Image (cartoon, rainbow, N blue to C red):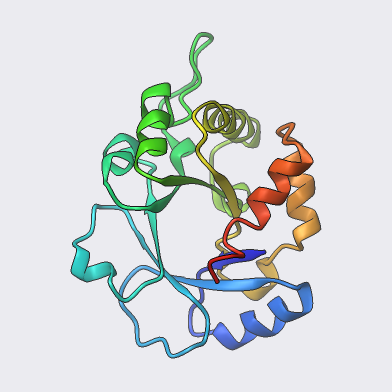
Length: 192
């Protein structure tokens, strides 16, 4: 399983613990850095970047908490995270999960991946029940429009890494089939 982490000059600590847990790592940065590690890298942005800004990275991650539709419309493969962090309240008719039928169709057309940011459960002020309900809604829409979804820990400290079996258990909360869990955990295995 490839896990995405946000190191702060502690890449070596991450790699040691990842080896114990049987994880492959991708280091996520919010700006260009002189990274000489053997691991893949990703750029996380909250605005649409220029092509020259992303050429040195293996993956692109959009923080889609504010404008998921505009990020979904970008014609470039990317992972969209934090869609479910919409600040508006849910009502009885509609769950404001950040992804709608229209956005899911655009994501499918533009090769986007829905990333479930597991760090939101530990470092976000949104109540856990609302967060779980919104993620469940997004997974349902991803299934309907054939948009792949993957879990990401985005750990900032090595001890925040999660065992793959814990992540499998977490995905089972959303009635994800064993095949879907396997696909989600091994999505990038052929690439790296």
